Length: 115
Image 1 (tube, rainbow, N blue to C red):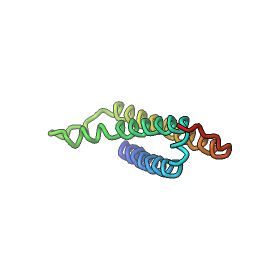
Image 2 (image 1 turned 60 degrees about the vertical axis):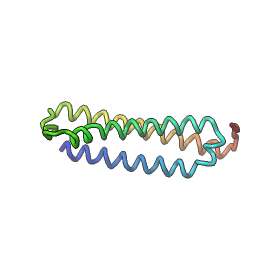
Image 3 (image 1 turned 45 degrees about the vertical axis):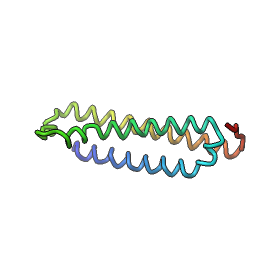
Image 4 (image 1 turned 135 degrees about the horizontal axis):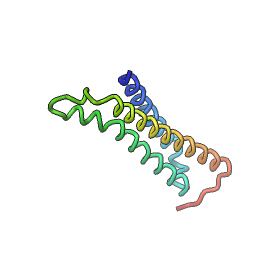
């Protein structure tokens, strides 16, 4: 069961990264002209890095470990890791939704503060 949870979180991280990339491509012109959108995009990128790192650290530890004993991790730690990854992913998604909302609002009002 933990394998399926980890696989689901990993796939969600990939999708969130792809959506972040598409958002950056779509909003690149608007982000260049708006300090608020720049700060929002930077926050989303930091959250993406934290989410991917939090998911990837145990995987890298397993790959570089000599004895391959990481499979014997108690389930409570594995569930805590899964919960931390899921929470980090939810915070990332919330930040991405907020960034898109702010960008749409700014495109409608077309109020830019040039930097």
